[in-house]
Length: 228
Image 1 (spheres, rainbow, N blue to C red):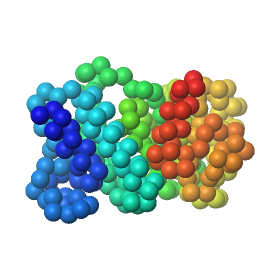
Image 2: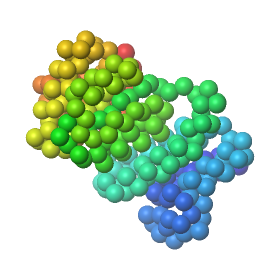
Image 3: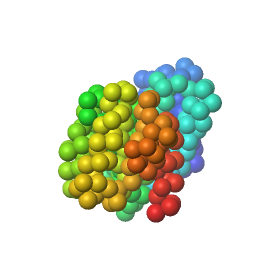
C-alpha cells in the first residue's frame, strides 16, 4: 500500500495535477485524487512524511527535470509540476518538523534590485524545498542592503541571486561587493541564475556558482555543499 500511494503521488507530480479537478498533461484524469489529496491520505494512513518527500516528491521532480532537459517538458509544464510540490510541502511542513527531519541546509533566494521577474526564482525555491532544503524567499527587486541585512540575520548557507534583465545583472555584482564590505562574503556561498547570466559572468563577479536552469541550480547547491 505504501509503495502504491507513493507511486501515485510521484505520477501526479509528473502530470502536474494539484487536485482531483486537474486533468493532467495527458488528460482524462479529472476526478482522480491529485497530489494534495494523495499526500493528505498518506499522512492520514500514518506514512512517514520523510518517505513522501524523498521517494515521492524528490524522485518525481528528478523525472520532470529529465523531461525538461530533453525538451519533452517546457517551462509551463515544469512550473505546474513544481507548484504541486510546493502545495505538498505546505501540507507536509508541520509533520516534517515533528518527525525530526532536519533540512540539508538553508538557502536564501532573491531577485535583485530593479528586476521584478520571479517565476524562475520561484521554481528554484519549490524544487529546493522538495529536495530537503530550508528556503527563505526575499522576493523580487531586493536591494543589496536588504540582502546583506537578511544574510546577517538569517545566516544562510547559500544565497541565490536571480536576474532576467541585462540591465539588472550589475546588481548581482553590487550585492556580492556589499557582502564583502559587511564581512559576510566568506560566510555564504553565492549562486546566480537567470536568462542573461552565465558561468563566465559568475566567475567575473566572484560568485561561487551558476545555475543554467532550476534543476541545474539545485545540482550546484548540492555540489557546493559536498565541497564544504
